Length: 494
Ligand code: AMP
Ligand code: ZN
Image (tube, rainbow, N blue to C red):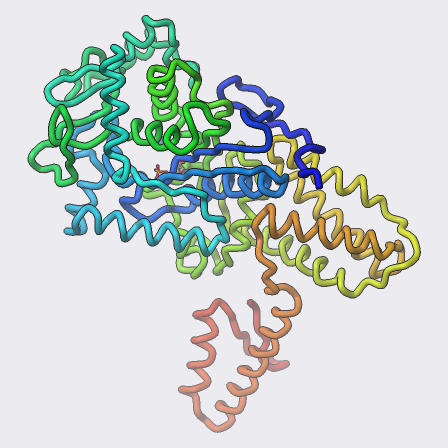
C-alpha cells in the first residue's frame, strides 16, 4: 500500500525563509528531525513541556503519514552557559552548589524527572536521545576542524568561533534571526571574560575550566568543557548527517543558539545544515513568558495535583495536552484557569462522542459528507500543523454524532467505521490524547460516591459523631469537593 504522504501535500513554516513552504524531505520517504532538548539542571516547567509537545505532535503526524522518521532530541547535561561564559553562570555548577550534589547526580535527578513528565503527558520517545557529556570527543573534533579551517581560534586555553572570519568568507552570520553583524557589534556590552575574544560576538566552542569548575574534560587546549552550541551541531550531524530535514526548538533559541549552529555547520561542511527550521512559540502566564529565572512558572506536577493556587482545581495531563494543542504551535498561549476549564469541557464532549459512536446503528446509506470532513482534518494538519483548526473539525464530528443519535442523519456501516477510525486516529495517535473516561460515565460514578459519603455523614451526625462528619466534609474539601448544608439536605459542587 502507498504511504499516506504520497497523497498529502504538507506545508510548513520555515523560520529560515520566513515563509510556509512545501515540505519535501532530502531523501524521499525519510525524515531527519533534531529538537534541542532540556538543560537538566532543574525541573522542566510547563513552558518547556509545551515546546516538546509541539514537536511530539509533529513527530506523530509524520509517522502517521508513513514517513520513516528519525527523531533526535538531546539532553544538555554539560556547559549550558549564559553569554559571558563565566563559571558563576554555568547552570550546572550553580545548581550543584545549591543542592550539594555531584554534577552527574543533578543530571540524573532531573533527567529522570523529565522522562516522568513526558510519560505523564503521553509523549512518544524520540529515536535517539544523546547527551552532551556522551559526545565530548565529537565536540573536540569539530572544534579542531573549525580551528584548522580558519573559523575558530584558541585563546588562553579556550576556543572561540570567529564570527568576523566567517562573515569575511561570505557566509552571512545572522541569516536565521535576520541580524546584521555590524549592528550586533554596536549593541554588545563589554561582558566579563570577553577580553579573550577577538570580537564580542565570537562564541565559545570550548571553555577552559576554572579551579572551581567540577565538570571538566581533557582537550588539546585545556582541561575544560564544551560550549552549548557545539553539542547540538556535533550530535545532530552525527546522527542525521551534514544536512538534515528539520531542526526545532523554542522561539527563544533562534538567537544566538540556532544562529550559532548554522554558523558551525556551514563553516565545517560548506553546506546549509538544515532544510527547515521550526520554532515553537512560548507559553505565557499573566502575559509574561513562563521561565524559571523570573519565577513566573508552573511545574507540571503542581497542575496535575491541584497544588498551585493559580488553578481552582487539579487537571489531568490529558486536559493540559488538549489545552496546549488547541493553540497553534506558532502562537503564544497564555495559560489560565478559564482556558483549562474550557478545555476540560471540550475534551469531555469529544470523549462522549467517541463512546457514543458505539451506540449508533448503521443504515444502508449515509446522509453525511464524510469525505469532505476527513479532507478538512488532513488539510488542517497539512497547513503547518494547524491543530486548532483540526480540533474545530473534530468538534464538527461531535455534531454529526449527536444528529445520528437523534436519527436526524444516517450513516452506512462502512462510513461509521471510517468515522470511528478517523476520529480516534486524530485524537489518540496524532494529538496523543488518551481515551480517559473522566467523561460523563465516570463523573456519574464520582457523584454516586460523593452521595454515598453524604449519606454516611448524615448518619454520623445522627449518632452525634461530629468528629467523623467533620472529617468527611474536610477530606472532601481537600479534594476540591464542597458540601453545602441547606434546608433540603446536603448538596455538593465539584
Ligand atoms: P531549556 O531547558 O531552557 O533549554 O528549554 C528547553 C526548551 O523549552 C527550549 O526549546 C526552550 O525554547 C523551551 N521553552 C523555554 N521556555 C518556554 C516557554 N515559556 N514556552 C515554551 N517553550 C519554552
Ligand atoms: Zn540545541
